[in-house]
Image (cartoon, rainbow, N blue to C red; front, side, top):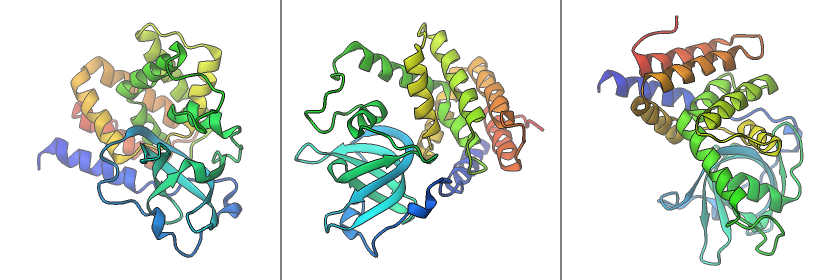
Length: 271
């Protein structure tokens, strides 16, 4: 195993160790004794649309009629033979992968306790699909949808998953950290001649706040930065410093992860 591979393994292990997200309404969490029908089938995540580890809580009614309220981090969206979108996610209450049909999701709550309504708007703005099928939202072929896809592509390439991993290294993410990440995204978009509107900035802030990067997205971001050159790496590392200092307190876990990123990308330690 070479040095880069070893460092990537260390970083990915740290991402896996971040643990379940803090939830303001944790007292609402409940799951049935068992839910085997929602267990993720082998190979189920191979053909999917990426979802960037978007994290929130759902009210869910399973196949057997059991009602639950649980925290999930979604890494992919699939569709079944009936055309119903399926959220492929980590259930933080089960500590296992699960598949959730969106037609059985009756409510969504952000981890800060804010309810997301209507659900059709949340599904569209977060994942880009329309559900229910007759919901009145902007049609996928409209220019603003294509623009949002381009915005997410730009900020993924810039390394937003790495900043999110840094911000969550201490298992918490504050408003000041989200704001710094949004500034980073704005600058990345501006470099591609995309000037964000006020509405897009609000949408981006909500998307970033729910972002809980998977090991796969972190590894992909590292590989992309390796190929992007020193300027992109320097920009990301400077942004990382601003993010972990945004709340006025430098946490050891955040500093260690930034140091690992820095050494993996440049061969030098931050400290």
